[in-house]
Length: 297
Image: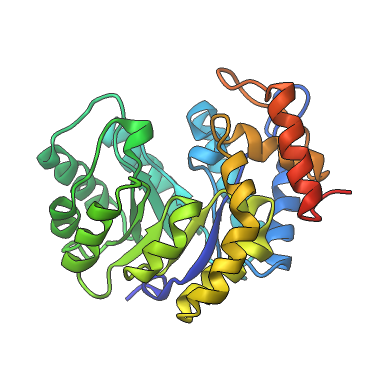
């Protein structure tokens, strides 16, 4: 059984830094990994939505994963993004990532195609059959226009390589149904920072977080308090983070979180089109909140 079956806590959905010339800034990637590990992060998730993976070439995608794996050096698990609307291409990318030493794959549902539930089952089974590496499913219908229903997830949980799901539907009723129906050892991870507390209360084991890029200590504390059933104390941390959780999504993710990390001095604030920098008004709101939290001076 994979060690990822015991995965718990807070994982950071890492951003991908770019240089002024638009190239991937691999030195900044390494700095971010060191920052996260120094603060006690439980695992790392490069090359997901927050990592602007849709704008990375295959070579860049693989090199970012390789860089994170090398920098982490076995200190924390690395679960690398490998998802998309072309099943054969996703499977090939997953095989390449497996060869780089990643501990698992995070695979978002196909977008644009809008597959049926049966199509989702066949898509993921095809990928799972092609690699010998744990897979965490990723359901985020707000981005993909494709909602993976609980019964579909339960069907997929029967495959030995499919061990969990990052659930970002925002539908607490659907999440509650999945929590009841899923196998006991199938990992339920929050894909929305504000829903971490209620999801763990329903049986979740952690979060793949955007906000932890900037405030890892606070999100780790929130997650672990929940896992210890200390929900009253967790609510205090939730209240502290509430404004940052909101502001990190005031414009399309990862625009605000990258802006915040640039303010914190970790990277240049560079995006790849079609993403563009934050509006001046929203940038000032984010700056004030980072200062309020003591993350910048």
